[in-house]
Image 1 (cartoon, one colour):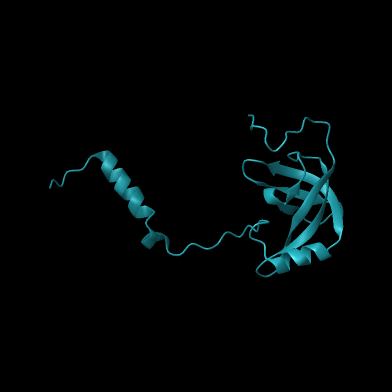
Image 2 (cartoon, rainbow, N blue to C red):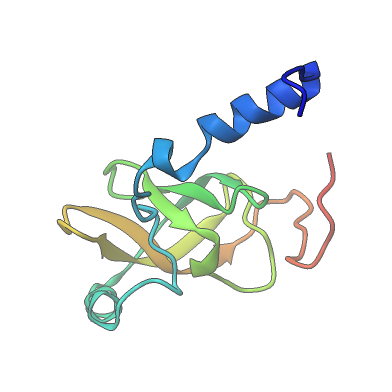
Length: 134
């Protein structure tokens, strides 16, 4: 067997070594809570919270998340794509109604759930099944 390697083989070996499980250790679970990963008890907490309103500050369909600016002046609230109801992709400026859901494990922060667009901005809104445009 030859001890001579091509540059491509050496690069591939470096990448494989860098990404090997022994180098990465155990991976922590994602801190993003989605409708699918939310526990029943956390969902129940969200449903007990009143509906509040705000405006979409930012939303990216390809990244799957965005932020809502609450009407009460609190800090922006994270929203995951799985928590948006309705047929349109939200755009900045859309008025929304949502419930606050505590984020585990400490339940110190909140994210928006049961998000409904209640007033669309005049811009053209895409449906969820529409292809992304650049």
